[in-house]
Image (cartoon, rainbow, N blue to C red):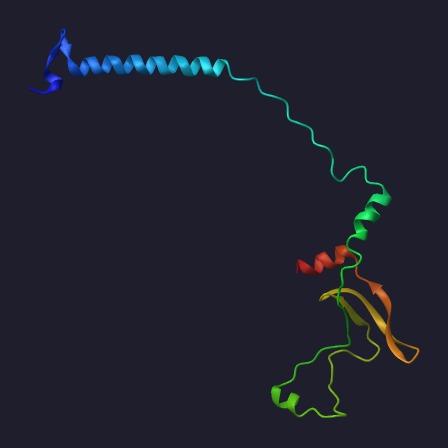
Length: 147
């Protein structure tokens, strides 16, 4: 005969196991309820110091000093053009390459490939230079990136 159908003190073994399981479950519930009431109360959030606040002008300059020696590449772009490889190979001393920019048009000043200003060519001590005529603001640069 199976254990489930055997009589054990007026009931089956299945009923006896079931009563033990209920007793164990009730004991677990009592333990978890007592642990829940003993849990610590919620604590208010900690207030952290403001990392960007109260910086004086001198402190900001000290932070900028860290990046002042980082090299950047400045490029002045007179204009652009596209050539076929055949035409490129035919270039020789004295060849003229037509650019898309007009004479007298402002030249772009790029820092690490990002347009930061426009200007005009000047000659200083027999060397070419550029006089900045228009500085691109950071907000204008962001607008151009979003296009």
